[in-house]
Image (cartoon, rainbow, N blue to C red; front, side, top):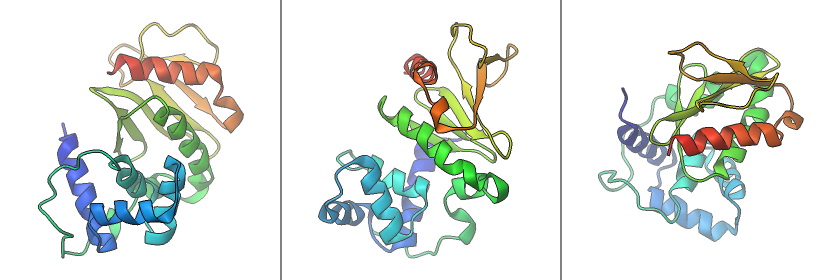
Length: 195
C-alpha cells in the first residue's frame, strides 16, 4: 500500500517545482489575494499559478496547518509534464464535462472535515484512517460514488456490492440535483465510519 504521507510530500514538492515558490510563499500569496473561502483560494491559485484542481487544493488544505518536512526551499528539478493534476487525466475527452459534478461532490465532503484525496488511474479514493468513498466517471454522462459504510438504509439508488468489494455500495449521479440530502447523508455516514 502506498504511503499517504510520502505521496503528500511528493505532491507538495512537485507544486513547488511547478511554481518556483515554496508552499509558505504560496500561502502568503493567497493571503495577500484577499480570497476568503476555501474554493476562492483554490480558484485563485489555479488562475494565478496555473495549478490543477488537486494541486491547488493541496496548497489550500495546508493553510494554517503544519506542513510536512519538504527538505527546505523549492526544488530545482523540473516536474515531468505527466505529473499534472490527475483529475485532468481522469476527466478527459467526453468525460471532461463530468468534472464540475465531481468537484461538487468533493465540496460536499470537504464540509465534513479533513480527509486525503488519493488519485488512482480512473477515480479518486477519499480516505481518513481508511478509504470511505471513491469518486470517478462511470460513463460519459454519470459519475459513480463508492461508499464504505455498513448498513446503509435501503434505497433504489444504492447498489449493494458483493462481500470483499472495495466499497459496500455504489450510486451513480448525472446531475447536481442528485447531490441531495440522501447522498450527503450516505457520504457523511461513510466519512464518520472511517475516522
